[in-house]
Image (cartoon, rainbow over all chains, first blue to last red; front, top):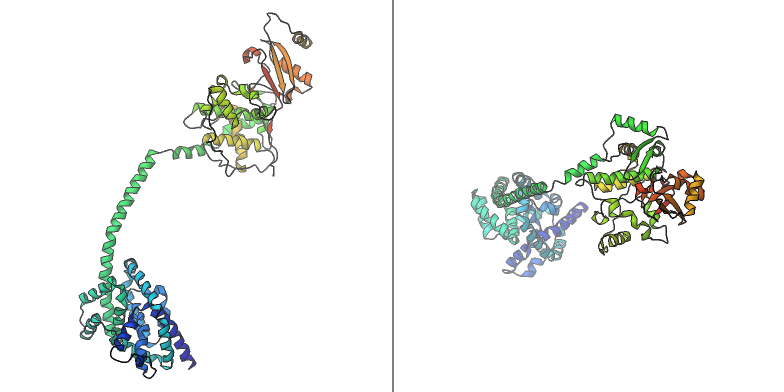
Length: 466
Length: 100
């Protein structure tokens, strides 16, 4: 008994759910019954059949599982399988139907989107009725589950509409009238609200005969197949459209890429920033770094900087960089830009002493550096530069224009690489300048410093930055 | 010889000799005035300045309008004008610990 009750409870649960699924069926059937007789008689516990005739509406959704197999999403499968003998049978037919339908399941889901939506609506509507049904089931708690099956059949008959009549005739005569089925299915598709009736139908037919069941599912499968085909055909046009769109966009993309081939040089530039030194160059640098301290290794005419062995030694690993090396390197960067203006940004690098001088008076002292950036000396005006209060004064003085810098945005370095030791800050500084004038991000870190030292030494010895 | 030069500067000889008076400004805004012949290397001025200020010569950098001055350059080669200002700054070096 305990087992039974538990079973029944489960049935209740599934009932609630299923009722959610079945549309106005219960109302429909009850109205049919009520019209001939007393409505109270239906509710009275006297005739279990009568009660159950209303109850089985809950069962109806089960067959629906085997049609568009959407119900799986709502998790009704488990409840139905725990049901009883009848449901087991249905399960096998489900498998059959699903087997045929599986191929088209994907297309189906799309095609039935609208239907599902409507069914959900149905579900909501019916949930209001669930309470009523539950009370009924409570009364029917003494009934065995087997009885329920019988009632199901009855219900199937009771709930027959015009369509179901047709259907039953088909089942009896084994007429493979696919067209009719199609029509029904179409009806179903177009009027999802009436789907419950159709499902009741299928439920009924399933109970009649196993062969019939198979046939039914097959025919259903065939009709479903047709439906699928239709939906697929509908989609093909869409797909064609999409294909066309894709082609169009790709051609556009390639066109745009042709229009701006800037990316490549950037990659090249970033590669150029890390070109390893040749063996000869390394040997040369090595010799210079450990050369006689007094010898003047190179002299840069424009900046009047002479690099002696002693000065260059600051490029040895672990040494602090010296102002002459830094300023010379900045000069070389400027020359590099002049040599290849296409490749590098027009930058002015102030001398390392500039800031010292600028703030040497009382805070900000423009006058002290006024003469540092004359056109004659630099060969260019700062206003021509691509990249500041200083700047305003500078421009005002040199070109007589008062420029508005409020619209300028301050640039902050992001992901600034930082030194991890106590001696590479100078190296980092000149590399910041180097990468900025290349228009690159600061894509280097502490690991590159030994290489940058050698490279800087080489570039200074050659008096040419690359 | 050096003494002689200094005397020359001090004397402020106003004659046709092509001399030039220069102002040397240190980092702490201390100003010194020198007179030097247009064609004599600025090494003389540098040494004189360091001597006066008691700096060690190799630890002072001289600049004219932001340009390094090499000891063998002359006022003429630099295009210095009368009263031009020369900066005497201490060398800079880039190293130091990362500050946290």
